[in-house]
Length: 253
Image (cartoon, rainbow, N blue to C red; front, side):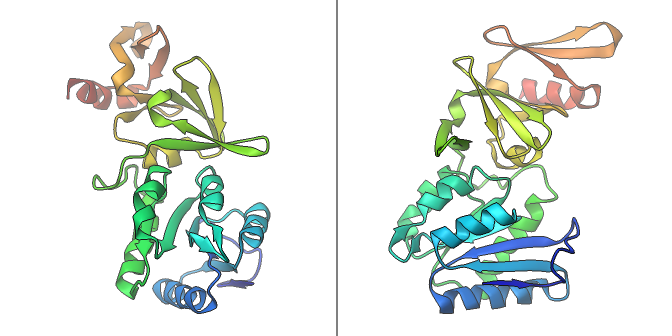
């Protein structure tokens, strides 16, 4: 079931595209009503899926900006979809009565966990967080630290430990994770999105690179005002001149 806040197909960059994955019709209707009330006259699109199958279909046909996900869908475990969703180029907010699963969800990289039953104020807080993430570079310091990055592979999802990631290189709409064992993984989130959800030790040292500062051995200056970081293991990563003072400060902390 799909509804839209503007004519179909007329998505502007500032429009928020939302997918609700909820099998209880009354809860889905309440989510839809409160979300529409939050946005008011601002353009947005909103789609409701009542099963894992229909949710997967929606994610294939149109990439949302945010997914509101229940963890119990007609008896099926919403973590099936969550493992896939956190590998996608969008934010995920879990809405669930299974409060004990909050830590597990945060460790997979969800943006928020809204416990059922929820009120308008709590849902507005989650929506504000989404909007902030679209304009800010860092998440709340109170947020549970991300432990895994979910990477899509043929027919499955691989959970890559964040602790094994040394550097991340931007590759257009994707990012390449460089791991301790010398292997790489292609992630479907952009470098900007990963910067928002990763622990603060991952610093943006260049428009194309995030680096785990714990891996840095030394900052080097080269001719022509160029700078680069030497990492443990011998890898080198360039540092932008526009970011050099910030990087110096981070290394001194």
